[in-house]
Image 1 (cartoon, rainbow, N blue to C red):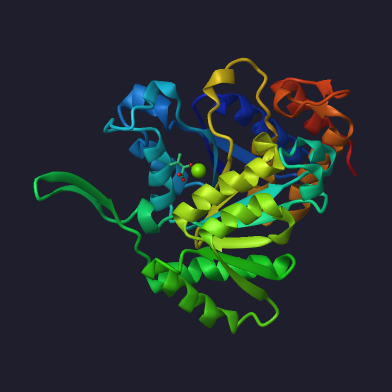
Image 2: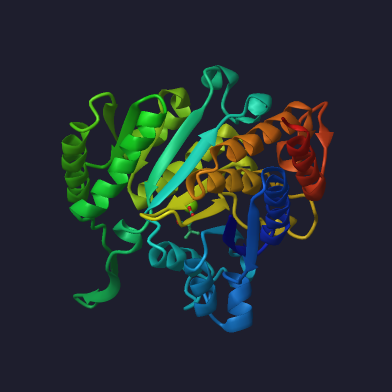
Length: 360
Ligand code: IPM
Ligand code: MG
């Protein structure tokens, strides 16, 4: 079977980490007799430079015609003006919207060999961190009506948080399904004490909960959730929430693990076509130096194998290889600690590749 992967290296460290991820998929392909076909396309800042738009038609077309999308990172200081008409992030929103990727899975895991990396006191992370943020991705305030107006001669602006029942239902359902596969605990984060859209979420959650009697459902206001994530991260397992709350909480959840360079993500829709990317962004300060951590992108390919291609065993093989390399003491600069061996981007990729080849 040939799997077609639209590959978007993007900006900053994107191309460097993508190269290692491609290396790993090729090793998996060889070992398990799969063919991965990489179709390289442009999006983000480099697309603005080359084509004047962040998401060229051709790129979108290539993504739609693929079995999945692998993305490095987009953005950088060169295109950072928030008042500019064309901005790299528009590529991300365009891809999410156009490909119908309504769900964003962001695991935040404290890896055992990296347990000292958390910025939280050891006593707070003693019970570990293993959170799955299920973020709504194509609705809410990101896609709602926005604009400028004048109020009694004063300039004003607005953005709209709007969700319909269908949009809520499909993401909450995925939250329940995800909880069923894990510890059967679902935390719904909202601001139902203030927002009408949150109250509609709660209604939908209550209705769907009847279909999942085994799942324990809890609700938490987003301000409290932000606090609880640093007070006792181990209390969370699956969190389901809206686009903007998920944006904020997933950054926080990843930070408490202390290794943002380790965390992958999957954006999923109603077909098998998904988009997979590290959550760390383009890190322009270290771009081109060969020191970026490729593990988040490599772990994103594991999510791709699992969620888009159903290759669960191959995905586990990648996860295990990464753990093995970390356990052997190899670290990129972002996760280095005393007594460990510092390696660069390519070397880290090679180590994981070797571990897969050696694995049974
Ligand atoms: C993310 C990012 C994006 C978002 C930006 C770059 C548009 O922060 O993927 O979390 O807000 O969704
Ligand atoms: Mg974000």
